[in-house]
Length: 334
Image 1 (cartoon, one colour):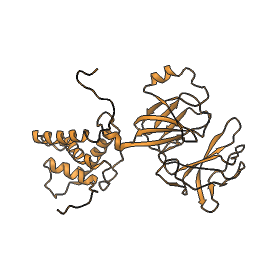
Image 2 (tube, helix red, strand yellow):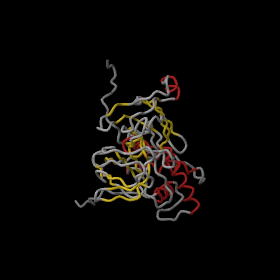
Image 3 (tube, one colour):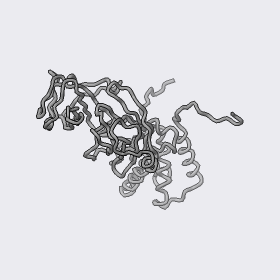
Image 4 (cartoon, one colour):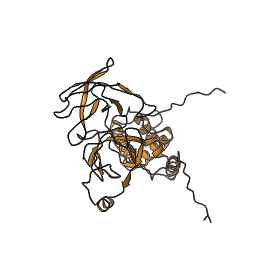
């Protein structure tokens, strides 16, 4: 028996739209979609993808493939953080690197001696290497408590190694030998759902953090909102373009990070040539759901056969890839 031996079947946004139009009977196989219809369908596809994103209660399997780990770097005595690519105060990423200062660096320095330009320990199995324009944070010896000076990498050299900052270490904030240096290429995206969070120390040991599920829980659960020390709980609020994280205390140790397990947002489909950023088992559900949502706009009568095909595709998708847990229910159990 001769099989293909390949497993990389994929579809573009245009092909999902084509399938939806064919299922609606608007288009014969191989036909060409009117440009205005394709534009409308692409907009509906984006709406659909965004509505399905991170729906932990919609599909048991969806968290499996939309899950990400997000590292949030702390600032001295700062309780509130915004996570999102356009946020000026966002200091969160899915792929951080860490090294140390190799020799004492005075305030005002831009060229720093570091131990390494590559990190394989912070996120085991992942190699993170410094590149120009990366965001970089240097733990500084600041009066009143160490803080992190954030800048970008102008250049880095493998011989030494050294890294050149776009902005110098601030006045009164030198960086001593052994101080940590963090870097990353891209800020984390706004995420609509959080599952777990831990406070991770410099030895990669974790302390679980409680997550307030409502503003009331936070307001009633945190009596002294200006106490100093390690946070033990946090409030997470997805906003329009970013996610706001509010801690229950003001951090004093910036060498610790909050590591969150979140459900990441669905990617945009900016063009019909974009590949579908869902797993293969979602393709049929996406095309039939798109057909269902576009039927009225196209003046198509939604037939019982279409309804049955739509229900079959969506139901099968929703039941795929469920996580296994140790809790189960049994009739008559005690």
